[in-house]
Image (cartoon, rainbow, N blue to C red; front, side, top):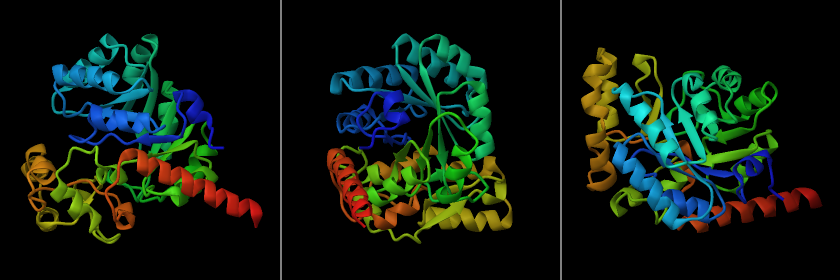
Length: 318
């Protein structure tokens, strides 16, 4: 029932992509998504060259299903991007998702290597540019999502129809998707699939600590906040002591260089792995308010699909 242009493009059973999350989207999590019928992504941004290669090899040991690698096109070391590109081509990865800056400088190289290219962005205008650059599908990040969501503040209910009306390639909806209701809603809006991230943080296969997961499922829908607004960015995170400190400093005026020690990877790792949930800012979508349990990835995806079937069945019978 849920065969779409995205399932055809990726060769997967369900049009559900596991969002790439720094430090969390490892081979284990990506393979779990793929084995459950979705499309798993390994996050390359926090991997060294050798680590990324090891993650790809490990993922192939864990699944024979399609998976991809996410490459962030923004990094303090530009050579990191080229290294990631080299690794995915050396390892003959079939799918790459780029994110952040324009994929245009890299698309030709990836496509010539036979790689299907997805691009994640936060505005329809950037999606159009990505399509013009030759990507095969775009993921649009809505206002509801975790992490960087752009400055347009558009929810998916507006952005997805705008996108599908102006693009020819498949559109994936990211933000606020954690159950079958949001899944069906995204497809009804015209999306060819969804991307889930925050929901997967509360999975058994996610490598975050149990302390973090317990904290996550206590989150209310109003417990997220934007930081970095004063720097012309928008970064949705879980409200905690670190986020409150960042907001206070932003009121006084702060540069990105001054902010980096507060939002960097060392502090994020403390939140995710060292049981100190107040230590740093952590991306968290509004959908966290709908999450109240930790499940296996298969249980999460099965529940989304089963709920979706029930919803469609009710609509057909009404």
